Length: 278
Image (tube, rainbow, N blue to C red):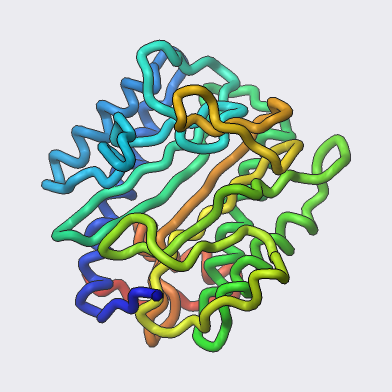
């Protein structure tokens, strides 16, 4: 069953989403050479406290931190640690969430640590981010869940990969519903699997976390011995981008983007819904 939200509930999710955006801004500034991933977790904890928000990551299934810090070949669910020191040339995907009055926000981004990154890494992050926005732009009344998956996959497949070959669209993880819980139905693939059918029709009140994960090589992953950290099986580096999005009567609202997604959606010819918080 898909949880359909009222406009008032979407406004609460927008509050939570703006806290997530604040965590992104603070951790992005702190993700510099010499910082540990545990340092970034402390930054996130401070932002949550300043906004009187709760973490939806801390304690989730036993997860020991408030953010996921996934460096280089780590795809998702990296655990912050004093032992992981960021170096010039690294990339890091930071995934985090917040709860306000029982309503959840969840988003991720990929950052470049230092400078001098190879063109293939710059392209990897750009392609992953833009595929997310292509998926968000497909979140419109009358479409079905599979239309979002198709938009993400189509964008990625059409992008030339520096050095040849093709990007790996991670198979074992995807997006999800979000609302009174962080992970809810439906599961959202980042590619089309015709065995799954078209999925539910998108209607106002539908809320999704849309999150492509893309590698420079294989789509295959493995979980390390800590039972959390997910890495590519071939060691190629990966990128992860995510936004929580609500479909309203007036179009999509990107709950975790400071501007509600207005600027990026305009590039796709889509008008973002008005911000319920003004």
